[in-house]
Amino acid sequence: MKKTFKIGEAALGGILECELIENIFTVSCKDFITKEPVETGIFAIPKDRDELVIWLNCDVTTSYHADKIFEHFKLQ
Image (tube, rainbow, N blue to C red):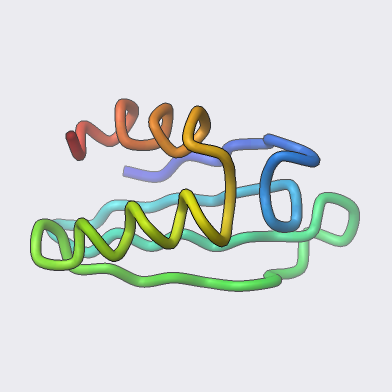
C-alpha cells in the first residue's frame, strides 16, 4: 500500500511518500518543487513503531499529520 501526502510547510520537504509492504514501513520526504528525496526512514512494524512515532513527530511533520498517516495505514 502506497500513499503520497502533499503537506507543504508542515512537513520536511513538503511531500511525504509513505509505503507499507508486509511489515516494513517506508517514509520518503521529498522536496515540494523538485520531487527529489530529502530524507528517508525505514521501519519494521510493530518492532520500530515507537521510533517511527518519534521520528515523524519530532523531525518530519506535526502530530496532526503524523496521526493522519497512522490512521490511513491503520498503524494505531
